[in-house]
Image (tube, helix red, strand yellow):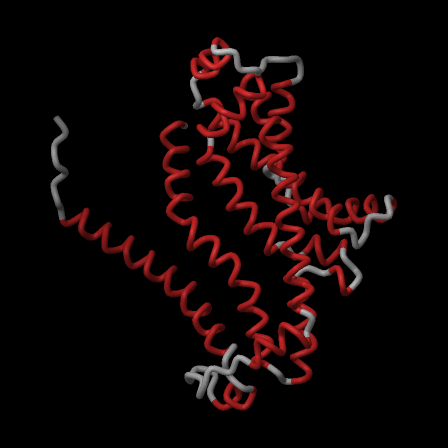
Length: 284
């Protein structure tokens, strides 16, 4: 029988300190976010008069200016395309690779897994220059599909690392039972393995969605044409334009446009993500 933990002055003090730290981090995240949203409804005159004052009215013209005049609509659609295609490429490559590494023993398998693990420590910035030269040599600059494939390949080590752990947590007896019932290997993966590793797949999808949507350095390097740029790169252009035209409201509206999709995705999938992490922790 598990005994209840006694409440001691030390535990009370520790809990209070942890709560203070968490509230401080929450404050540092929420306040800048709310401040940015507030500025997006202000006119430039209101912004210069008092940056901390509430807007006199909800000025949606700033969003219209950012969306149409600053070409944010085109940047938005480019980001949607790159994010969705990157995610599709990633899952097509990561799921079967993870299954093979988790279930089969073959020559070089451990070496491949080691290489994937080492890939976790390689930052994209380290390979940006040679990658640019390679992409330019292949005439794939300003190609959104090529950029999507590059994104997916860069995130393969993280995704395989996560999915391999979940697949190993699935008992082989389920697959053996499916094979006895006449299922092929592909049918077993589709109807047995994939439903049981949904938490892991969801974890990979959410983290990579946010990463693909917000990625800047690689998109800035490989996309040189204005009509091919993604939202983070387009936002940088908007900052340069609006800074000299003193239209600060449109600038902050552009920032909110970039933030909104990730906030929506996280708000709807937060509970499922927490459940996925907990399941992964229990299996590990």
